[in-house]
Length: 225
Length: 225
DNA sequence: TAGGGTTATCGTCAGATCGACGAGAAGACC
DNA sequence: GGTCTTCTCGTCGATCTGACGATAACCCTA
Image (tube, rainbow over all chains, first blue to last red; front, side, top):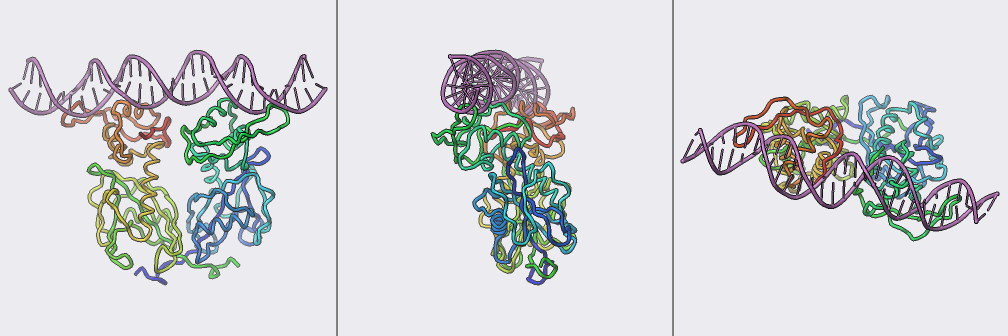
């Protein structure tokens, strides 16, 4: 037993939940399928893992192919392996979560008909079990904002406290007190590093610019609601 | 493209990190391998996913086969898919974490030479990448105790606050103040439900018996150290 | 039966933290 | 200059935390 050729053959794919915040909404990167099954339906970007690459590398490769950007935060979300999730064959898919700043319009991938950012509140019935995966990804992202500094992944390299607060408000769907948010965010060890610069925004007083700090977890965590 | 027969074939397995607390140590369920490669080395229990079962079902099946117990808490830990992690063929393994009460000595599995509980502090160099997986599992378990009521999964159906505290102390490797622990644990909404009964233990005052509550997350969370 | 040992449970108290909100700072615009 | 906007710093009471005293309820021994 337990020798090559003596095991059930599976196809292994990666699926990507790529989230960003743009125009006051949490958006996911979706592609429109050009092939059967689910032809014409929205789906998560993804593809087969190659025989000589690691699963993590496959996710990074697909992400770069779909967004044209590399170096984004990318973490494993979970693995989905129901027997009938793909009607053609037995596929096990490893899902990844990526948080991106407001990127330019995604490049139309090589094999995907069209790619675009869709507000997650308007997404309905994706191909395969991708609706479930997307839901899990959004939930994970919401939880991550509480106890990690990953909200900064939605912002550019330099950002203001108000921009970061806007990210939290949109992802969590709540409104936060600007003064308390400012106090907690600047008080959490290693969350932000000041650049010394300020923005000249229209309207009010210029805001200080920050970069992401080097902390991996937040002490104390930010709380929702 | 994208048709059966036109994709790289993978073997898909599940690996189990089964943890328990016994004799003042956090222990993992390990099996000694009876076949090459890594013959004679300790490894995590696990096995191939069958072609007609879901990955989650495969994990539950293997867990029942190895421990003789079903109904334990079982959650996906992560997927490990480096190309060379198995020297014979391309294997992608989905790891699961299970938290168990102090079970009787595990049954020697059908295909594993021997199975036993090993304190995680004494584990060294498991087969394949199982040391990494075990480390991830222990870290996940430690984090889960903070914000979920899953510490109760290490206890029996009814338990005292002191028994639960002992679990936390052993898993986290710290010592906790009994009075503050009691206050926080009984104060957290839905963590514990009193049975009204008490134990007749040797020594001190009898302790109240509790069962696991119905909360999924802890408010407020318990903090380490 | 009294006293000591042990463990469980409740209280107290100072310091830290949180949410709600006032107030000043620093710009744009009229 | 006056007014608007947004950013940033402070204040205050309620709440929570950790350290630790005190009491309760058992067992054991003399």
